[in-house]
Image 1: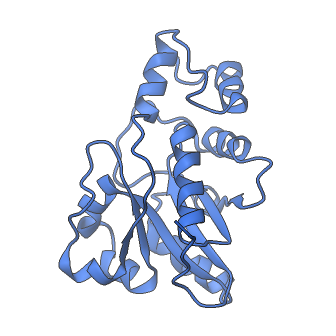
Image 2: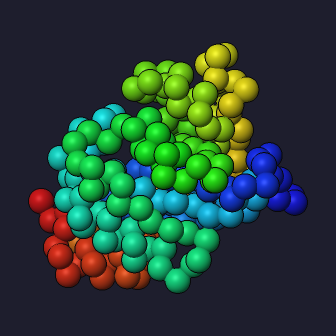
Length: 203
């Protein structure tokens, strides 16, 4: 499939936010597949400070998740990382991040990259209508998530990516590490080393 760019001539950036607890190979594959399919210039990875839709007792500190994400994407100039939500602190609402990014980069066209599990609950996101009015929403398949159901009022803003469905999750990786099982090839080597050195997710 040839890349397809539905944007303007301005630089195009996909916003890829999440807890990245930890960042793993499925994140990397999805980000690159979406970048390629939709002709994005860059993917901006944004680790959140406190996710509004998750209550996770295994959530590593924001500084650790930022450091792991930075190492996961190192060496690839189409991926960048932003500390916008980590620096802001508090609950990480997507609408606040979008408004700040558009204010700081008025010459850039942004899109939002989310999983199909997030699409299912998107209608309940804080200021969901405002988000949908601001940016296209690119959806990739997630295990257990719906891939084709879209709230009618958001339908014109949603595009579906042809990213592969990968049965890899942060919760599985954390559980394996706690059980002293291998996480090699599930996360980049630098991330695996960081987890081991900092003894994250040991309970």
